[in-house]
Image (cartoon, rainbow, N blue to C red):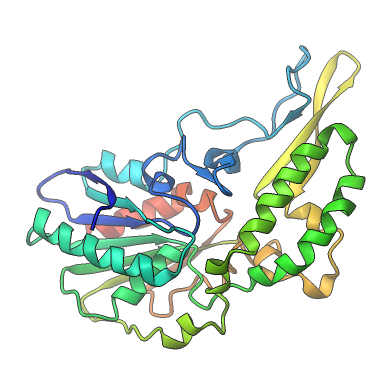
Amino acid sequence: MQLDITINKGSGQKPVVIFIHGLGVDKGFWTDPGNSRVLGGSILMKVFAARKPRPCSIKPERKLSVGKLPEKPENLWTDAVKMGFNTVCWTQKRPAGPIGIAVREFEYILKYVTEVFPGKPIAIIGHSRGGLVARKLMEKNVPEIKALITVATPHKGSSLSRLGNYLAPLAPVIKKLLPKDSHSTASELIKRTYDLLENNALKELLPDSAFFKTLKDLPRDNVKYLSFGGTVTKLITVYKWKKENDKFYPKPLLTIPDSLLKILPSGIIPDEITPGKGDFMVTAESAVLPWAQKHYNLPANHISIASHKKMKDRTLKLLEEL
């Protein structure tokens, strides 16, 4: 099997950490957070960690802004490499395909890792659907696996895909609320969000899907389990510059998903995109690994949680104990 694999050989005394990315992205989600793209490759991942731009006295070159981007974003992978852990990640051939394909690839990766690092304990870190890929394979007894850490993984499924039925008809409504010179930006964001919600692989994660009905993994006594969930739904805000007196100020123009919440009927808004209950893709409740020794809910969205300090600190502490 030919896979695009990144391996970092660290200290000989450290365990091996296999990172699994989620739906619709590639290994760059972990290995290259500064350049990795999401939403069909249209948006840099670091946009989701952008901060509100500051007022300025010189007229900005562009009318719209998504905020100040981090120059060198660091996530759990970058910290693990710095600490000398042996790290492995691969790009799933069909990251938006059936989960079973990713599970078979993971099985190959495990075999490969045990050959490259014989006798080493292995820890698995799965973001989003990546955590389910790990759980499915762990239905088999793999003695080398000593830890499973899931980050924003929908252990009870995600109902977000059902929202796609309502989103497409709302695009014209949202555009009418915005200035004409921002329509192309708004249309692109709405389209990419809709495409994500309509993805068949996301439908596979519905709580009543065949996947969850056949998921039969059980906790093992010699494995450490840790999970994290997010409670911030805001993914991205588009600002429009407005001149007031002698300065230009950023004014929020469109926020995903907040702009949708204002026009969607309250009865159809899922907890996944309800502030305080979800991270835009997964509810905090669903993110709890049933047999995790510890679980943490963090003020982060589905993307930014991979760089959250508390998540990194708690995970690295567990890895040091292996």
